[in-house]
Amino acid sequence: MKFGTKAVHAGVEPDPSTGAIMTPIFQTSTYVQESPAVHKGFEYSRAQNPTRFALEASLAALENAKFAYAFASGLGAIDAVAKLLLPGDEVVCCDDLYGGSYRIFVRIYAQYGIHFKFVNLSDASELEKHLTDKTKLVWIESPTNPLLKIIDIAEIAKITNAKKILLGVDNTFASPYLQNPLDLGADLVMHSITKYLGGHSDVIMGCLMMNDEKLAEKLKFIQFAVGSVPAPMDCFLVLRGIKTLHLRMREACKNANALALALQNHPKIAKIYYPGLPQHPNHEIAKKQMRDFGAIISFTLKEDTLEAATAFFSKLNIFALAESLGGVESMANHPPSMTHASIPKEERAKLGISESFIRLSVGIEAEEDIVADVLQALN
Ligand SMILES: *Cc1c(COP(=O)(O)O)cnc(C)c1O
Image 1 (tube, rainbow, N blue to C red):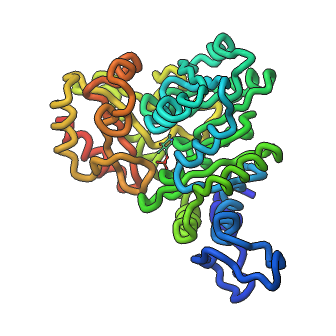
Image 2: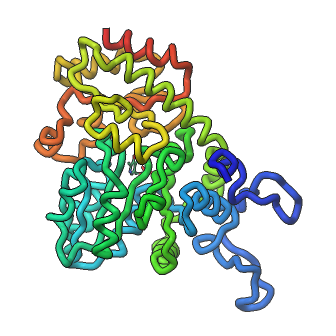
């Protein structure tokens, strides 16, 4: 089945009791049993909920996965992955990581004796030297947030598969429409559903997808035991959002590409980060592993100050100054003071996230209006 058909139909069956075409919102915490332990497969909604199950089936189909589990947030999903680890284990992460992922690893799990290394994996061959007998997990994003580095997932997977190290990919920035890491050899895919999958800036949710049955059993147990599950109403909203994922992604990518072209030689811009531009250092890898280049553009200003960035944000009319991304509406973010404030300033500077660093999430408004808004704010 092609992607658009899966987005509309996968996981969603007409309700057997009424024929309702849309999955009902099973807003219930528990289920009545006929006699002790005799029931219809549903006992308690932390463990089983039909609205969540429909969503999980849809999510699995989108990533060509056998299993998918939904969590109360993207970080709830990452937390479940971290719970696979034991004291003494080592994790290698890409160096440009979502601020909240960095925070949960370094401020929570490092306390329990798990060691995290952050490595620039734009060149996949770098990975090998950082692996030891204790490395249990390699955790990457591609495109990364906010520098939009592209990591060669198939090359990384060759290395981790040979050493039987778990490879997890945070696929939030690409969405399943643009990239399917399991098909490239990864073991585990994670999404902040809050972003493109939900797509309407109205839900916080996350998920994990995988093919290996043993891994699935462990993660399902963690989901149940810890209880960071999403609410039925939110699962319904995400099922609705997914139906237009392919249309939204297509439009947002087209708009982002037009904006990147309009900004690439702009006199006020010092450096632009967009994997769709041929001068992007990993443009060829992006072409190989993605179906389009995504809808996030980052850049720095020639006048590299917080004041210059603030002036830019204040002049935007269509772009909303907000954390988050992936909604139908265009959003502008200042990583140093917003999404990436939890990363120490010196670390940020080393990565190139300077004071005027700006990240745009391009939405699905009219292309002309989006380009005009950014150009007038720069000028
Ligand atoms: C937003 C985000 C997360 C965290 O997800 P939440 O749903 O906010 O908990 C993780 N990774 C990436 C790349 C993100 O953009």
